[in-house]
Length: 265
Length: 261
Image (cartoon, rainbow over all chains, first blue to last red; front, side):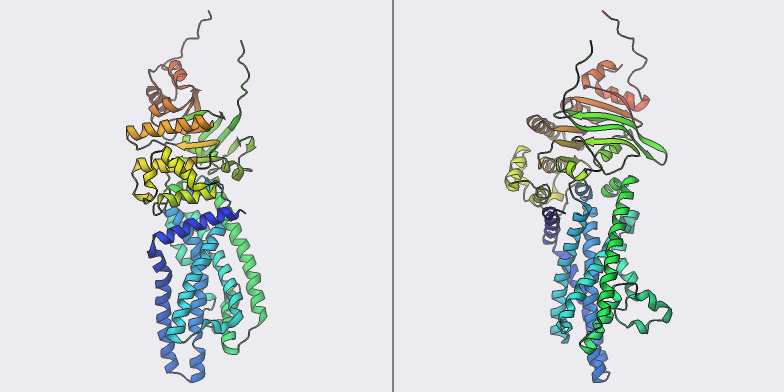
């Protein structure tokens, strides 16, 4: 792994964002729309419920912000790849001395930067507009952040592998993949609220214990460490499998001679 | 009298390279050597196998069978080391259109680890007469400007091996002439080995030391442009090209064996 090459690729994405401010708007606008809708729903429920439940219902906003960490990390990987496809730059990258791991690492860094921008804006707006302070999650916020980001990266690699496999016709997967899993990772409800048959499926995803843990911390100020071990362990498996899938699909694309077609279409 | 052994350094070598797509051979036991300081033209009609060959040589497509070596190393196992010493430019790829020219070139200079990149970029842009384009948006350049920016990128790392895929496609004769002259100048000064594809026979005659004609993935003939014309029943390289594209051979009828003096 060469840090110079990773920094060069990150530099290319930063140039892109500085040249096209509309991309920054996209990073901020949609999360804000979500936040305002959920913030207003929360206020409405607070006003029409008892004080204790009204306080607890703020977890909606916490869930929104944490979900966005996962989503932006996934987008960082998938959209960075698509940027290279859209600008017909993929071939230049693949014939340069860039290892797959370096390319993916650069997209991970871009994902991290996207999360930072979105989280700072959302945290401020939720604090000022709805008196919700994400930092009430205290130090638990750090492992929550890291685990959701890692799962987002894994989903990003899976989305990219699928796009590489099926071509640009499948590029909507870059946005859709996180929403395939959203119903089962219990972002806005508890695992026990799901139908009994679907609960074991929920625990197959590292995001589930994180969202369960978040609700625990908001309710009791502490959480079960087993949630973090489970999320961490699952993330290691997901990252390894997603990385393997990406490399395998890339090699298959090379074997089938489709890489050039894909890169120049 | 036997010819003396060829002692020139081999930069790129393909041995019995075959690439099949759904049972059809796009490249059929293709072998060649490219030496240091040599410009080798790869010619043929559309579908002859040039692009497949170029893609295999760049590691973008894996061959079905055969061996590929660059700088004496197997290509697949040493791809990164080899690409560090090589570069590529094609009329069919572009640098990201939404970045400024200097931004694109700075990114690639960093990828290749070019020492003093600002100076290097400025020198190459001056050489290609595009110093004024640094702050222009890449996507708004004309075809000629874009080709020359791509060439700056291709020369950034002082490559020992350069692959140029139709570098003068869609250029006007004036710009095409300038591009050919710069390519030849830099190639001679730095003794670069160049693999060159083009459909423009003027390009080939001016730039290439040796050419290989491909038809249906197989080598039909190879030699210097003038030797090939001499071997054929045609008057010029363009006619040879057309003859091979239509008939797959360079002669109307077998030439008589030369009579020994």
